[in-house]
Image (cartoon, rainbow, N blue to C red):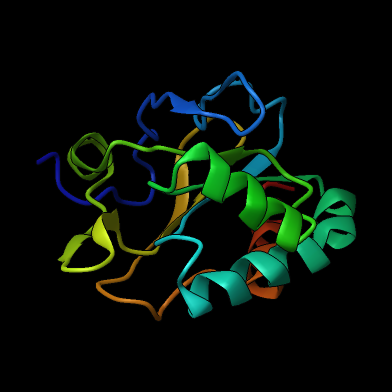
Length: 163
């Protein structure tokens, strides 16, 4: 395991299948913007549903603040597409993430559950425009995660420091 990523580390190059086709490359194509990467447990997690709904509802504020958002889980494409539709998810959404790869490359926690299978625990990253980590939030279970208001305020603060 690489270990957990720290502030200032470059986010690893990951390739995740995207709902609807194509691939997500979280560390690439930042276009001079900050980026939020949300790794969620799965469509079945009530806490993940709340987080995704909150980010979807904050889409205009995030866009106005020039913050890109993407999310992914181990859910297959069908479950991920239904999850995105349920929350009117306006951002890129990945599916079928490989647990071992994500754990190895990011240090995210994983869980083996008798009925849910092998999945990733909630993890969130804020990336600077150069792909370096501004903030990492690792959760060992369902709670402890990024929320849109905090993300917007932190990035505004980071921008103010560079002036």
